[in-house]
Image 1 (cartoon, rainbow, N blue to C red):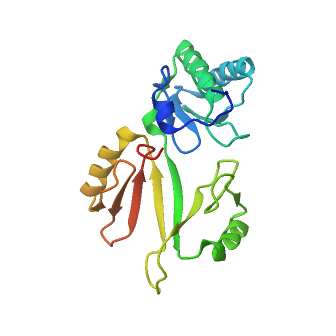
Image 2 (spheres, rainbow, N blue to C red):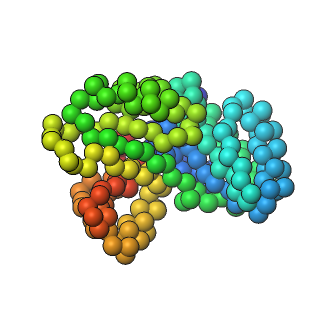
Image 3 (spheres, rainbow, N blue to C red):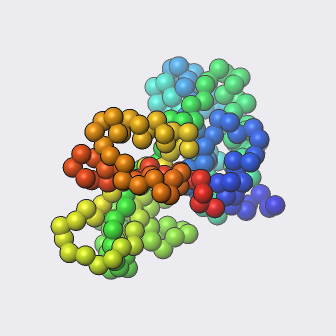
Length: 220
């Protein structure tokens, strides 16, 4: 397989040496506990060396005691073998400096807008958010720098207001769903549907506002 071919969720899961990482949408991500800024800067330097060896560029978010790492091949807008190679190099570098991976801490929040005609509203939301079209999906606009949450348009039947039009989709690693659902129910929420779990589970707050917990499982 060409190292520029986008990989599916299932293909990435089948790879070895990626225990520190989780595939979200078109990204491979993890978070390292560094213990402090100085150690975090040392890890960033090691990652820079690894990136030079592999010839690929990671996206880094350094905080006081954590370093979040996102890998994506933006030329094909997906995870490729270049990302897997760099992920393994980064894990090795983190182990050498004593940084601990916490891949269950990663998540991606999307905003979903119910609409019977996304073509009618897409240009407005793209303009007001300062976003761009998703490179692969017509029904979504994104901050391609990866900072802001994606907005995607969920097809629905025409309807009159009022009705919930926006909801959040929260993409999490598969092992996070069950405890997250339990916590939401304990906090007064209710289960709307798990018919499509683990791809997505629909929950509602005590006032009926819905949210979806999603994973990459069952989506290839």
